[in-house]
Image (cartoon, rainbow, N blue to C red):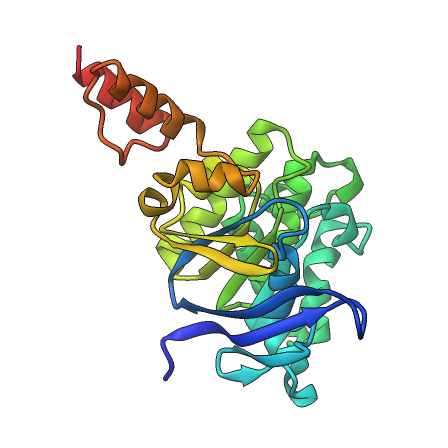
Length: 277
C-alpha cells in the first residue's frame, strides 16, 4: 500500500477557465501519520490546495489522489470525502442539525452506515473531542470552539485517514484555538491520522512536524519548522513572519543567552530560559 495518504502531482487550478492560476504546478505528498502546516498570505493558494486535496475542487492539470483514489473519479467521491475529512474556518457553515447528536450522524447517513451502528460511532467521536456531555444540546448554544469540536466529531465518526483543516481556528478566541489544536495533535499522535493544518498563525505551525509555505500559487518552502523558520527574511519578503518564540529566541541569542533554536513554543522556551539562569 502507498505510504502517502494524500498526493498532488503537478497540480494546477484556476477559478475561471482563462483566469490566473490559483495553484500552479504543485507537487506535494503527505505520509500516513504526518502533521503538516501549510502557510501563506491571503491569495497564496493554501485554501485552494486544501480543497483540491479533499476533492472539492478538481485540478485543471495534474492529479490528486486520496488513499490511492483519483479525485477525478466520480465513482469515488463519497469514499474520498470520508477518507479525507475537511474542517472549515466557520463551524456554523458545517453544522447542519438542531441537535449535536443529529449533526454528527449526518455524515454517517450520507455514507450509508447502518442505523444500529450509528449510536456507538457518534458517542465515540464526541468522546474523542471532549463533547459527549453535549450530545443532546443545540449546536447554536455552544461557543465557537465547541462548535468546531462538534464539526471535527462529525468527521471522526466517519473514521477518516486524514483531516484537512482550512483555517479552522481563525474565528476562535485563544482558548478555543488551543483546545482545537490540542485535540487535533492528540488524534494525530494517538490514532495516526494524517493532518494538513492550513493556518496563518505561526505559533500553530511551529507545533507541526513539517511546514509548507505557499506563495503565488506555488510551493516556496517545505521542511521542518526549524528549517523554515530560520529563513526569517525570506518569510518576511512573502508577507509572513516567524513564531513569537522564534523571534524571542533570536533576540535572546543576540544578547548572549544560549537558548536552542528548537525552542518554538512557550513551554519549551520557558524551560530553556530558566535553565540559563
